[in-house]
Length: 421
Image (cartoon, rainbow, N blue to C red):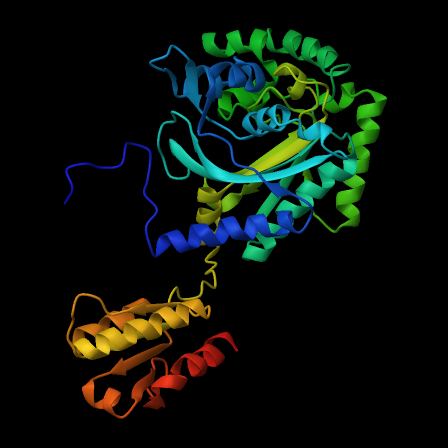
């Protein structure tokens, strides 16, 4: 065993389990690719100030969970704790908002890092697939993104998730609500850290999971009662579009999410089979983020779905993904001449688009057939000196056990038609 181990709170993805994570990423990405979203990839680290300004210095993510460090050149950098700020920074730097019609629609997939207390479903290194629609203020975009996430989860076979929906208002009406909420919270019996949050980020207290805090929040002012007419109308349109698309959601007046940049629409996907870490993804509208990080006014909306938690949700529901075997054909040579010939056959099969593997390491017939079984291949081709002298190989159907000779010069075509149809 190695003397080194993965750092605390992280994990390695290894076969066969990694195939499940790949399938989840692909399923989430599929409806995005089908809806005009282009792929973007950003660095794993950024300027600390990007997250401090964009995500918010008072958030737990920035103040407690961010991995920040100074480079040898004196730059202050941080491992990215979330994707939106990075994607918007990249879009602004590349002037994508000037390149054509808005919105700029982007999707991404990658690893993110937060210094969390490790537990099941909450890691210090985690994987997300995200989507952002940059540069347009339109309730249809908010609805589109929620519908696409719902579509992705349903395509995976998930059924026991819920969509929570709220509006956080805009820069006109939210300050009025913030004042009213602060006045209410100052009268509560709260610990010192939570009292400090009243001044910094009072909306986050609504999301506090502690029972003694939630009990005191009964009777707190509700944001919906403070929404301006424009925000009320906007939220009504989002709700109407979701309803017309047959997407079921629940109104949650306490849903605020953990980032400062959200405005108006905010939403969360939760799965009750995951215990305390029930959120599998979420997002919302962030109309002021571009200006916060030095760009022009670009109203935008997006989400990120956790790959790790989606896998846990699938396991909680007992959903088995239909993941095809990585190998369709496995070649078993007996002797040096067969090794040379079958290696050539495997190369031809791969060029024809057939997933093929080979018995490496000079194994005997018994060990090689065991390797063929383990590979999950549907077919095995076996050849020894006598077979090659007759210009044939033996083709075995690993499912039925049937075996018979096939002409060597016809085996690639025969297998291609069986595997590829």
